Image (cartoon, rainbow, N blue to C red):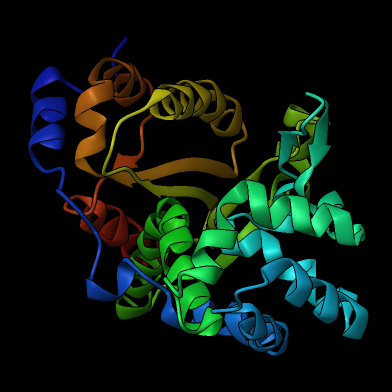
Length: 282
């Protein structure tokens, strides 16, 4: 039996918003600045190489002075050491990029084969600190997907705050005895928990401005999770989601909509707020 009607689902879909991004969403300049500052001394030392006619000789001289300075060469090709990227060497053997920085010959091979030699010799950049800041801005675009979810969580927190609702953020299933019994070793983290007069609401929050297989997985997961949580008399599952990305996963969202009693978007979340406030009065 469907929890909601087809008309309610069509209305839900029509209310989905294009974006939750503000102008400060696209680039976290403070984070980029911190990354660059952490390696700025080494980058300034590498500036010595810019414009040198005998680049190999300059690299050798700098290696003799401070071989550790070359440990930041990976970021010059927009790669982070923590990513553990591998490439094929001249013999066709996979090796970690960072392994090139352990010997002078490795550094020379790296600089020559990556194209950095032309970058240095032709003065295509004049300051590696500024250059890497630009790289960090570019790499920061990868964090936008996570920021979208964080913005949604903060938006919901603001709505709760404005309504005077007391909540906890980032709670785990093992914090609730009945839920822990049902889920067992399948530990689940919830974005919010709100304790009302007679039950606790465990809330998941997300926002998708683009499509992808993840949306189908999320909808399927919550469709399975909701009845398990709701089987506990003192706990209830709530899902707050929005974003036009759901238009690309409409079918799966529709299945979830008909199966999950408490599913809201940014427009209808006011109904959930009213429910919480009413339970507090009752």
